[in-house]
Amino acid sequence: VQLQASGGGLVQAGGSLRLSCTASGFSLGYYAIGWFRQAPGGEREGVACMRSSDGKEWYAGTVKDRFTISRDNAKNTAYLQMTNLKPDDTAVYYCAADLAGICGWRGLVEVDYWGQGTQVTVSS
Image (cartoon, rainbow, N blue to C red; front, side):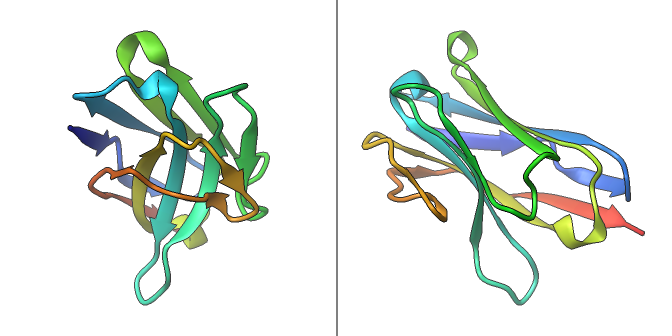
């Protein structure tokens, strides 16, 4: 059972990246999905969340209208489309899944599974 995150890289400010998070050993469609990030010296913070029950989305204020969370249950994969990237978006990004399926005011409330991080670096 694992989550595999991928898609990070180096991009110039204003550019775009799409992160992927593929589940193995369980059906991601039954789980809420969360994306988190941790910048150097900072705490891990939630950036986006999607409930499994109704697909309702939540975004942190710093990424709202720039990032989009989505899922493809047939591929057992979730995505985070990031546009208009800024240097402040530089961080290690993590995906997470939770069967309880609750997205709170800071993102996914509980986590059953974490993916490994993928580095996103935005140059100015």
